[in-house]
Image (cartoon, rainbow, N blue to C red; front, side, top):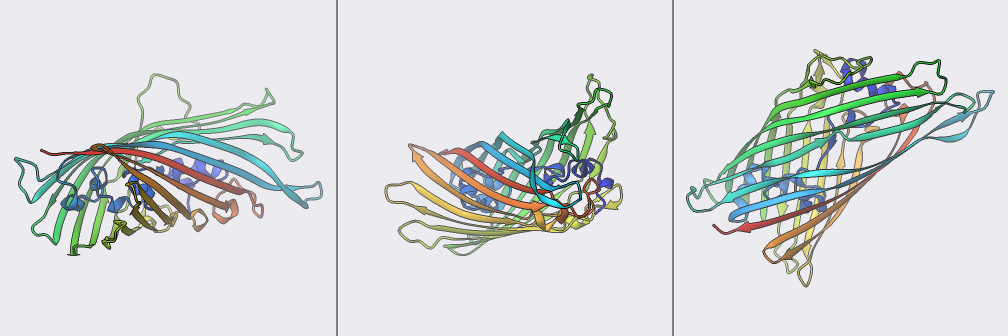
Length: 410
């Protein structure tokens, strides 16, 4: 994998390996808290936010004007240890290399959906809103030591930014068993990266590299909903984004470009194919079972006409929802995502959530927990790492999201 050719991704090698946050950002919460609690099945999320990703679901959304807002918190913990050697070059154990914790706000989005309201054709439904498909928040710091474990400096890497998406969606239902949906969105946002190394020795010049850039692009989506039975729902969708453009910010502050280029560049983003099914058995618990699958040919991504050597990515999600006696709703699920960088970065997540009806309002909360453990040597072509060594990274990502929604009769 030619990481150096990927420009901004080269910092991934300098800091001994980072997950996909350095590439296109950490996946955000693009659906409601209900979807997160059910295995993060956002593709089958029948809500004002969910139909922005799968517009065909507008055909089975609640009638009237639906409004929804979602937001939450993400707590990321990363511990790095590496092998320790004695003066004879023999390994004597593992030593903590860095310990980083990040607690960040996760904006989910806000949306409205219209179905079967006065003045609109009955066969058509509409939705509009703002969602956050990914964020670039990451903080890394470590104490730099020599072979004798004497402190020689401090290194830090700060990444911040957000990718906003403003969407419009429409669905057409020619019959009760078939619905077609189309959505388009404008992407805008920013990504700022600061890498700094300060040495204890005042005669040794430190390093300060910054890259402040804006992100822009366009994405289109088309989906089909098939209802062969009143209890079975099947949906297929294609998401096709235009190349994502990165441009330096115009700022009056002095910026060091010692590591990052100050030129514009475009990154081709591959399409994503999604498939999902929902089953409502009709029991007294009002159960809902969901399952979905996505696939993306990330292996075709190029930077400046050079293939990045990534792998095709895919993932599966599944969840269940039950209405408990007394009214509260319980949800559980899981997800598995195949990393485009290395199988060592594949991630399993476990989710749970609750839902409540408060008057005319629906209040949902969902949580996910994703543990991961991988070794630097499992990712090839990172030139900053000594061959044969074994820096071990342990990660946990805990996310909590709340959403509130209501349907108004019009």
